[in-house]
Image 1 (cartoon, rainbow, N blue to C red):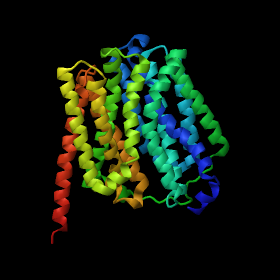
Image 2: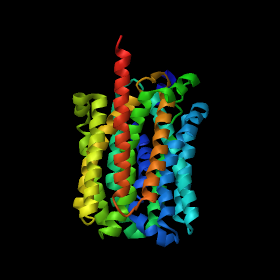
Image 3: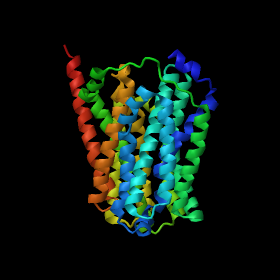
Image 4: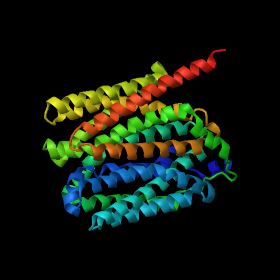
Length: 401
């Protein structure tokens, strides 16, 4: 670990300037594109289901790719994985902008997601290498958590403005340009931080899959992130297609949900201190369930509008933040010795659940309505609450003599 630290001779602001763009780009690759999603089937001569693949596959590969790039970064180093992933992201973004067919566009989105996944693995592996037990690590992780909420607030607004000025292709060229600047900065400044003798424990890593707590809290994380995934998959179709919002009007309404998430994030420490890990998860699931029931009522008795679609999502946003603020600790608490492998499995399982179940909800149900959100949110939160009850009962029995 000392060699990792000696090679990373950056002040905290300089380190954040070097690392944060890659975290931002991975999220922007999804969110900045949302305002033009309803128009893409006509522009590329395809169906909404094919365009939905460009969202679902991005989400899937962003998480699943970590199982490939994590071990690879342990074998060949963080720096080559980061630089290669960033280069792939830049090239794929450029190619996506130049695509004239739907399936070529889907393919370049796949490559874009793989590039983003590689950079995220190298980024978080570097943070673990350098800041594992340093106070600066708390600041870095807090910032990256804020980015998770902040980028969805600004990304669609930026996407709408860019598309208005230069068309949908300009969105992907902008991603390529930002990625190129980040790649050049990393090429010049990013050192190798991989420990000289990384520790592997295949048996301990496999134990992750046998942990009931891991599955309960990972399902909770999947419910929170999946609710947001189904929301941004359906929101353009509901607000632009059904409620008649402009691209900018949609972006502002969409951003309000992310802003509620940001505001709740500032309270998450106090929330966890008051209710604990399990209590926060229960309340997060309860708020998501209540929110989607309100969405169901709006779908049945109101026209699509800010009041019937966005206001219930404010409540869901609070539940999402309460959930994701505790699920990592709940799922990974037993696996400090194999934290890297456990984190990769955690994010991979989450991405699989979200992309598969979330996509099925959007495609099998009417994606122009709130029903995908209702079915996904209510079904998943009910499963998590039942699983958490069984976990707590099991833990109580183990404590009894």
